[in-house]
Length: 401
Image 1: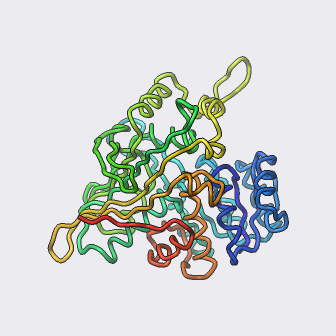
Image 2: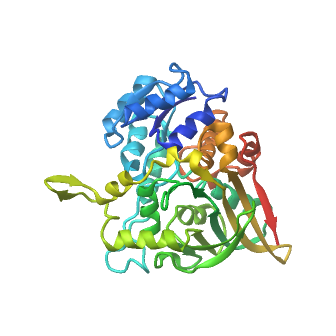
């Protein structure tokens, strides 16, 4: 497979590192607006022929198309903030390449009733173009990171192999990670974190379909495995709620994230003073987006690995019936930062996100996962994916009660 990797931040680097030793990978172009960053990752991989480094502006579709054609790639892998999804997605279609991302096109809140009704939903732009992708024989695989991605694979596995009836599919994410020397240091893109945490969370219910609620609503305590323990989780906008109901028969879908009171307080403060705004404003004659200022003031998550301690757990809780009996399961993956740094030299959150995309590449390249159109991970057989997780160093587990 020949891949154009657009975005070589923390997750992009981890994708390249994890894919580097896979026999199916012929070429991966490391393309980033920060060419020095792409060069740095290339040097780490020590193979400039297999991993050429290029400057790219992810907001310019024509540049992405030209680079895809220059290298004759089969797949464009979008590892950028989701604000760039539309030009990268459209570029793949124009270039005649398959496409993959880890977060779908952005939502827009309902203009009059944002905490009850949906406006433009996550992924609407992409799913509206599914017919054209299918007619062209191209595959756009959306949301194949850890959450969304692995969590969606787990949901499909539960439907096919563990339940006769599903009452609720609930994605639950928690961690006990700390960063030495920082009072506040997000371990993932703050741009994306602000977007998903401050937007109205989406819930899906059979008969009611998609609706929204207040940010950080419906708190619950969830007991995570891997030594993490009990963490309070709250509603957050996330792709699984938009993906799972398209493919899995159930009555309700939710996503809840263990953020913590301090983190929630900081996000609320950013919103209160307008620093979550992604639209540019003028500051002393210079136009700048407040959210970009926040991101620039914080440490780069890709460089925090040696200061981080602890583990993170991502997974899918499912409640329903099997053989007439009530049943609940939690399918999960626990990743430890120390182990990820030792094995990959990438911090745990970006590594746990990246390995799923690389497994997806392998399954597409080998023809195990195939098709055309715009699809989520639930559209494919979950077992080959889950079988590869252990081989990639990220084994899955299950709790049942």
